[in-house]
Length: 48
Image (tube, rainbow, N blue to C red; front, side, top):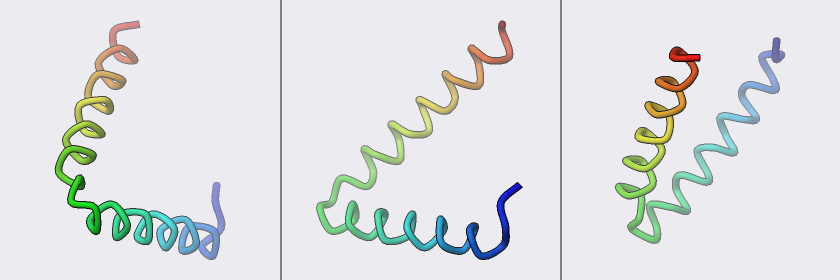
């Protein structure tokens, strides 16, 4: 398990990355792509 401080650092990094993506206005594509990849991954994981 991650320590609380590590979780905060990871969340901060993710937040900064998201802000950078939003700047380039490709956030929608990235979010949709990420959700699709996650759904496919979950589906394959449960099937095996």
